[in-house]
Length: 336
Image 1 (cartoon, rainbow, N blue to C red):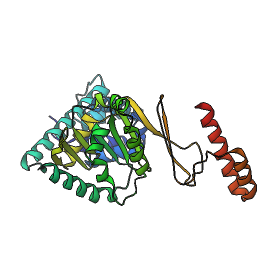
Image 2: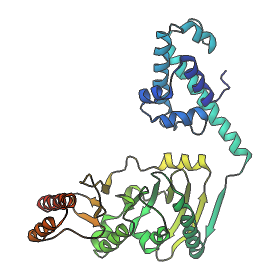
Image 3: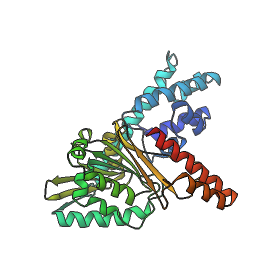
Image 4: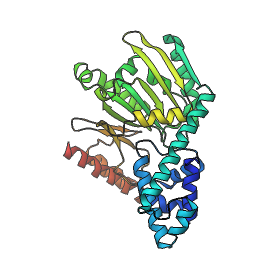
């Protein structure tokens, strides 16, 4: 019976086959950083993907073992029957049992210690807590962090939530996922200016908006790999309660179960059409119905003669940039 954990089992097969992490990563379609985390025990594959991961890994291990002519050695080393007919199945089953052992071990460890859950009540206390939380967390972000909000953008706007993110920070790598109620936008056109104001304030963040009907039940705010918050937002009273948790395993599990990976997008960030970005253009936000164009500094909606004069009076290296801006604006206007 397998009693070793998944990291140990995976490490043993890689050592037995002398396989590199990058080889396994390429074969099963994962980044090599994931393989490293699985081997050192920092993370486990998600429960949704584990069956495919084990089957693909087993196929590669079995193929390598056959090429090395070490089938008998493998059966002795991993205690498989000598007449094992399907080596791929045997390895996959071995990894699956080790995975279950790791899950059970994790549950045992969690049972020994209480989860760090903090509950905050009253709108004033919740607002103060969230402001303080983002003020401390956002400046520490280093990678392409993802803030997933199971809620409606304008409900959060009316509650003052977006001001909580207004802290000295570098947002270039923050991806914000949030729900949007199209009917509310249709009924209240004044919300368009509020949407634009938030996008303009957090110009370096990458916003993606989803149909709110697909995000209306969970009431979650998740900063991936950092924390998860479940909240209660009441009409005209604001956010009256929230529960905060930052246990890495719990946060990871919540993100995997409630991620927005397959939810249709309504409005999303796209990259600049320029190779060089000198700060004039920052982000496009578009959908099939309308488009926002955000810019730092000058907006190049200028008459042709102004472009001509700017190009004539600018150094050669800058004149080329201005000409590209003109062409791009002409293309945008033509498409619109």
